[in-house]
Structures are given as structure tokens and as C-alpha cells.
Image (cartoon, rainbow, N blue to C red):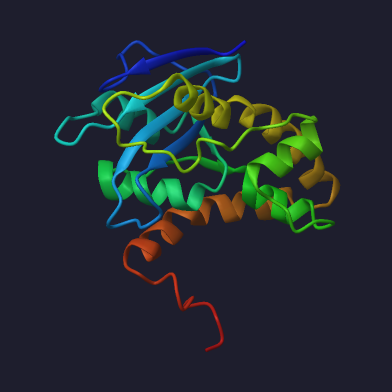
Amino acid sequence: MTNIKLFKGDIPADLSFDESVAVDCEMMGLDLHRDRLCLVQLGDGKGNAYLVQIIPGKEYPNLKKLMTDEKVLKIFHYARMDVAKILNDLGVMVHPVYCTKIASKLCRTYTSFHGLKNVCYDLLGSTLSKEQQTSDWGAKELSDEQMQYAATDVLYLHALKNKLDELLKREGRYELAQECFNFLGTRAKLDLLSFDEPDIFAHH
């Protein structure tokens, strides 16, 4: 059973995590410049999820401090989008970062399915529901279904990281993965400057 706590504003100053925190974001859409950040989910890997509603005009010093705390690893699935959105909307660069999607692509080369739902089922045997993925995250009041969905997105990331680390080390790509994670901040800056397509690393 997941314990869910909703904050309509910043997280408490005394809310602390151990060496890592699972993070996910919900937005009004997928356009980094047009669609605002609505919700930041935090998970401690122990069944507790903290949902932070991002209200325009409010300040989030405690959340920003956590996102930039060098002693706390932030675990995302598809960190590229969330890191860029947090930089754009909250003005801080998230670091250090671990991305389970990048890790999956580096070590699960036997499949082309690297969505959170697929990776959780393959590595943990857990089935995730994606029914609320396209709901209105900008609503003033979130439904119980939305909060449960949002919490689920950070519930498995710690366990996934452990499984993926084993595979990365087995396949000799653990250090390469760390280099990719370290590059995510630069990738986010490029995305915010619209250097996403065409990719500047592409031939043409």
C-alpha cells in the first residue's frame, strides 16, 4: 500500500531522503516552452510518495534545494524531459541524475520497449496502469485516481535502478551509463534552445 502525501506548494524543510529520491513530473503537455509544469512526484523507495503541486507564482526553495543536493541522487524515467522542464520552470539544474530509461536502452538491447510500464513488467513483474497519463494535471483539485497514478510513477524507480545496475555491470556498460547521466544537463539546455531536431550530433 502506497502512502501518498499531497503538498499544495513547497515541500516541508524537514522532509529528507536518504541517498536517493525517485522523481517524476506531470505537465499540461509535452511542449517544454508552452506547457507548464503542474506536479512533481517524489518517492523514497519505501512506499511513500510525496506529490508537489506547482502553483504559478509560488516559490519552491525546499524542492529546489533537494533537486540540487549533490548528496541525493535523483532517479527518473526519461530524465531528459523532466530535467529540462524543471530547469525551465523552476530555474534549477537537477543533479546528480540517474535515468532508468537510458539505463534500459543500454542494457536491455533485446527489446525496443523501454517505457516505464514495459521495464517494470519485465524486470519486476509489476503491472502499471497508464489510464490517467493524459488527464488534466493543471486542475486545482487532483482526483484520487490522478494521485494514485502519479504516485505509482515513482514507486518502482529505486527497485528498477538496482536491477538495471546489475545488468549494466554484467554487460560492461555501467561507466558508460554514468557518462550519459552526467550529460543530461547539457542535453536539457540544448532542448530548451530548440536544438532537439535536427539533432546537432546527426550527420545532416
